[in-house]
Amino acid sequence: MSDSESLRELEDEMDDYLVQYREQRMEELAKEVRHAKNAQDAYQEITDEGELMRKTTGTRNVVIFFHNPEFQTCKLVDQALRELASKYYDTHFYKIEALNAPFLAVKLQIKVLPCVLTYKDGVETGRVVGLQGLIQGTDLASFKTQSLENLLLRRGVLKHRVSDMKY
Image 1 (cartoon, rainbow, N blue to C red):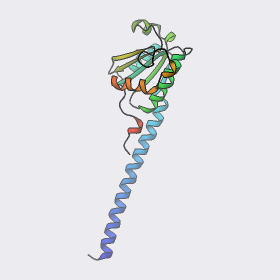
Image 2 (cartoon, rainbow, N blue to C red):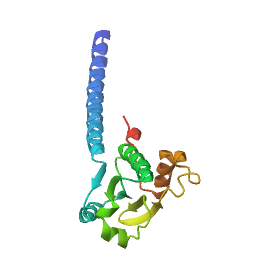
Image 3 (cartoon, rainbow, N blue to C red):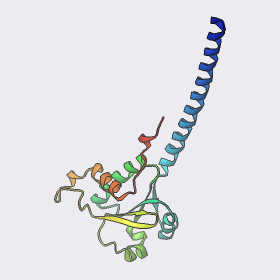
């Protein structure tokens, strides 16, 4: 085989590799775009407790936030959950105003707000009542999203981060 034939064969192999790489990369980017679009819906406000039950039944990883929009502590948790929802695409985050869920509030014995419930495969894995375990004493300024994230990671409801996607 001559040098020019070898060079041509090498160029053909390189072209095949580049085409394959380009297709793979386009597929990965399309997947990322789909996840980004889903992230817009990743943190949904539900106004009807029946709808909340329908959405969460049979869902693998769920975080439900019962809140009062007037409470400063609820605003802190709301901001943190919004941030986490955009990072963890395989967890469903829902929030509902406690006044819109009287049946669930009684059934789930929710007496203090904010209240964050975590579910894995339909089974409650834990709850955060108030900011218990997330702040130092009564210092609201000590609240960090990272603290809530670590707690939800320990509960097993957070798994795959958008930034962990392979490219």
